[in-house]
Length: 431
Image (cartoon, rainbow, N blue to C red; front, side, top):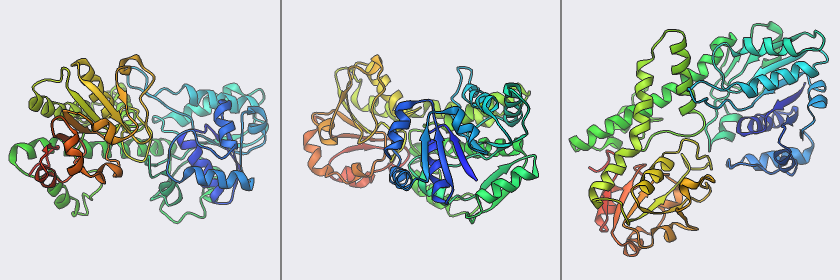
């Protein structure tokens, strides 16, 4: 089976790579000619460790092709994965315009049986909509199956997650579709859950919402730890050894961001409301996350008195290390508030860049952490890049105007930082 991937963003590029790596012939389709040209050269248009090398390998081998030609791509492939974006609308629901466009394109150019698989994160019932959109766009009737096969990729760990998944979810109504998908995934040795499309769609949302809940729970607990003189990292370690809880996503910090958790939790809450169900826990998860960055900012404000004319060094912009993704990044909210309070903000991130937005015009973007720190009244660490922990902080302390360090990711050792003369505050880890 030759595989067509519609959409060459984060999910699409990774999906194309993993099927090529598994031995299938794969074509990536996108309307963005610039993206396609870069991919044809084996180059990614975003940062993801290890992915570009594998894309380049399979482009060179001829197993992975890229095109903007919709008609040729759709008519020439019998298995089509939809991997386009589903961003949030202003009301919090998922915007399915790109899913609809892909489905209509498939219907328009369909020339025989197709298996259409939605890998994008979509609300419950989307497979039924995809079916209807394809049927409505067909110029003449052709048989097809529509299935759901959600992705479970962590930014910064996408290659590992794609090549060694912990589970594969196949949601299909047709035995033929199920059989074909099982054949595509025959080389993967992990649990394969066969279920309905609606169930598969909800599994993805439920998974992300649960992980977001763990994060917000620990951020709430960290505030209690501050007041109780308890180290939240030790609490998390003790909790994580319980196999019913596990150690993942128990790290207190500035809150979650990125392209998945914020929009997926929002969509789940909004779609539940439309069905008359209130997901009160998830509503609070969202509220805790929205305000979490301000907790550390309040600590810095209390120390400095105010931010007016203070030099503030922000270390890290991406919502997590090993990615250039700044969507919903807590650092953006932190910087915005600092600028409103007349601070002089100096920023360094090894990969991520500020959006082209006038709100951030006065931010000094530095080429190194050392440059950002020079003359600072406070350092606020927003992303736990490994390089930040490897800096010689004892030496750097002398370059600050005031040795204040506010650790939004609990990356540093509080006692060690205080031992070399810093005023150090983290989130629930100061004891």
